[in-house]
Amino acid sequence: MACHCNEFSRAHLLRGAAAEAGKGLPSIEPGMPIPAGTGMSRRSFMMRAGLGMMSVYGASKLGFADLQSGIAKAQGTEAPVIVSVFMDGGMDSLSVLAPVNDSVYRNLRGPGIRLNEGQGPEFAEDDSLMWHPRAAALDTLHRAGKLSVLPAVGYADPDQSHFTSRHYWEVGKLDPNLRTGWLGRLIDVIGMDDNPIQGLSLDGWLLPSLATASKPVAAIDGSAYDLWAPGVWGDVEPLMFDHVQAMGQTGAASADTGRASAGRTADQSVELRGTLKNFGEVSVPGVYPDADHWFCQNLSALSAMIDADLPIRCVSVSAPGGYDTHDNQASTFGDDIGITFDTLAAFQADLEARGLADRVITLVYSEFGRRPAQNATGTDHGAAGAAFVMGTRVQGEMVGEWPGLGTLDEDDNVVNTSDFRSLYCSILEQWFDVDAAQVIPGASGFSRPQIISS
Image (cartoon, rainbow, N blue to C red; front, side, top):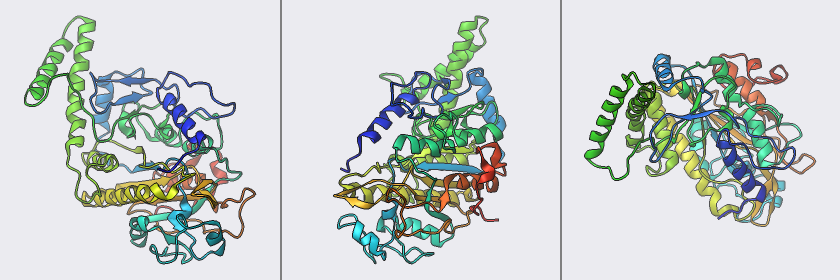
């Protein structure tokens, strides 16, 4: 197994605590940012969850019936969707797009991590770069004009802390005190007051990029939403739910306030089960690399949800694998990027087969790249890394040139040739037709690379 640093492990523990909305954070180092969304109100509108749970954030003044009607009211818009995929830990982009012809690269990277010419496909727009052999799916997408590639994206004066750098990407500003996510602020602009699935986290808890100031958002296990009762299964189970819903409907008509409230909750929980459970039961199409893998199941379920006209606008999900590869990088890196990129390519093919591809783009990023110099069997925290935007409507070209390794920053890391906030501004204006200044602080100071084809 690849080994991670203590700061990466601590960051995960702290974010796990932050995900328990309203319960605060344990003591952390001075200056470490609090994740966006910490303390948002959270309500769960179900009986007991089996494999998954749906929680609604930021809707403390709305009842379940209000949210249910809001979802129904928002259907039928066929609005654009973004899926944000985070590669947790600082993905080594120098191994995804390797400068194999660069003598500096060959001197800094040794056997086991260094890639050699001919091992993978050549990058179509810069023959000094080569794709990792397990990233061949991205090469295919790029050559088809369905993948824009940012080979060196980051920000000035990079912070090499997992916690801080990830926070900057999530909130869209170099501000440790900002408590809303960039996608959350987008939802505050374009969203509705009563549609929680307009912002959907598939990780089972709210991912900070979706944290809003005023509009409701939701978190579910993307492929497994269900209700259950101990000792009940098989043919008896649907009968139980039918009777629970019938009793709920009877209770909802009661003059007693408490009984009516409990009845409505039971009725609406069973109805929501019927809506969302179907997506977990849909068989994963054969285009996906592994029908039993949770990432394949989540993206397959998401494709089915969009196809069913659920009013989803922004989705956040974490990619498989841990990319904080200080030691033993070669033991896990290839498999991790393989399942991630193959599944993303399958998701794109799934959307195309359903006739949805023109409505969805997918953003793939990590908090930073890795240091060019190898440290024994791994790589340390770096600065600029790679990001990708996938979809049939993307420009499908390289954004920002590859800077090479001849000139590194003061910490001997790759310098950025594009700023992540420029990327966000382009997506907001070119995909959502929203003035980026409404979402990204200081938006006027950033360029607008062409991400979406005109």
